[in-house]
Amino acid sequence: MIPRYKRVMIKVSGEALSGGAGQGIDGATIGRVADSIRKVRDLGCEVGVVAGGGNFWRGARNGLVMERSRADHMGMLATVMNCLALSETLENLGVPTTVFSAVPMPLVAESYSVVAARRRLAEGRVVLFGGGTGCPYFTTDTGVVLKGIEMHADLILLAKNVDGIYTDDPKKNPDAVRIDEITCEEVLARGLKATDATAMSLLMENRIPVLLFSLEDPDALVKGASGEKIGTVLK
Ligand code: UDP
Image (cartoon, rainbow, N blue to C red):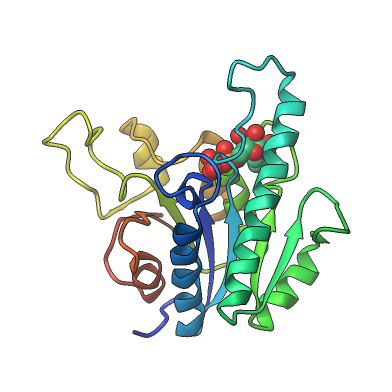
């Protein structure tokens, strides 16, 4: 397979690392995800990864009463933990990585800078972006779109637990059909579900293609980066 895109930005949700448990990190599962990321780099792509944190913590939940900003701070820390675990797993596979954190923590990760991150990508290192946008009230879906724009990525690979955008909820409606390609405007007009509103508005202003797909197929990342028809392309 050959890379269709030179620079790609991948979103890996926290849940995708938990191996069905929904919580924590499962060794075999993160190994598989890291191996898929390695294959995308082996294609010749420059690869950035934004990790979610929902496997450890997601804004106020679990019945714990917390002020939103503080709860989101915990969520951002969770995303850094996933980046560290992914970095370690990738390095064990022989893939050089750099971890940046949008929340400065110099002992743990490099503080995020656009210029330094672009340089690391160009050097061929897999760059892991922790801390999402660095601001509470946001999500890592918004984070990956923001980083994709800042890094001048050619494609954002947004892994979801459904393999694309459907005409209706496929879990509720057996007649729901997967859409191959759609614009953000059409998604909004038809009331379909793609990603959160902040991410959508950034996409509409910046016109970067997003592939929505599921990591259930272990080759999905490589297929997506090669331009194979999988999931839904959001334009
Ligand atoms: N978060 C945040 N700002 C960001 C990104 C994430 O405050 O820019 C926090 C927020 O609490 C969120 C949590 O980190 O719930 C984990 O991120 P997300 O829910 O996007 O992770 P995923 O569900 O993809 O694992």
